[in-house]
Length: 378
Image (cartoon, rainbow, N blue to C red):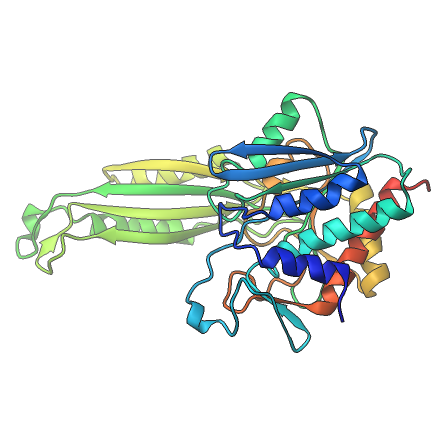
């Protein structure tokens, strides 16, 4: 069974847009939006393509946001079909980006086309914000468009990010926030030497071990109603001179906090430094704050999305703030209500990424109902 949403999703998957490449996705979408009365603004930054498309100037402004870039495929011989040749098998659409997130973009566009055709004089405005720099370093993508919009005071009222949020079934989970991300690169300094002469060396691995045990045991916070407790995890440890009889001169430790609104960046930094100082370590520590936590409280957007999901799927969605970061962390700076809603995320970034074909039109219908609930007279 074919549909406009399925066909557009297939066209987008067929474009090899490995981050930061857009590969013509935004041009394709622009060609669909321009006849609907959208003004198109291409924002190029470095190697990244961004698109800001808006129909109307009145408030409220409802924006659909997403990314056209995808992650690399991994070993091609382990895919059952070419990841950039969309394939239909057993009720599923296969291809890189099927779940994350070209299907959501197709659903955005088709929902908008249907809504505008049925209600050309709707209230408010509709926008799409697309980038090819979400799966990469995310420094030239959505954040650049947000900076431009903020500079000219073009603010959003509502935003739906099409990230794949569902766990088992479309609509079962809505992300109404995300945790913050704070990373550190710690270098513990020592004195290299022969392992047979421990009195002449300062082994940074052994020196750091008690501090590591203390950091691993800390309860950073207990979370709150919307967020799980803050998590501290080590992602990489490297030390050694390449021989079994030599102690390392230094130890490098990379770690990350996924933190809730129950903690602050300054407090987390202070507590880490206090532990390291208490153990008398000779160290340097470089910090990188990649994302602040954000939360959308109950309001018009949450109510509209909940009602749309119930009407289309018959289930009551759960609000969640789990998972990694998203471009919602940038958009929240110009929009008080940001939610994420998209397909099942079980296969994203994996080999043989896919989406249930039936979910495509269901997702389109949810997005269309949100438009109707927010941009039509009560």
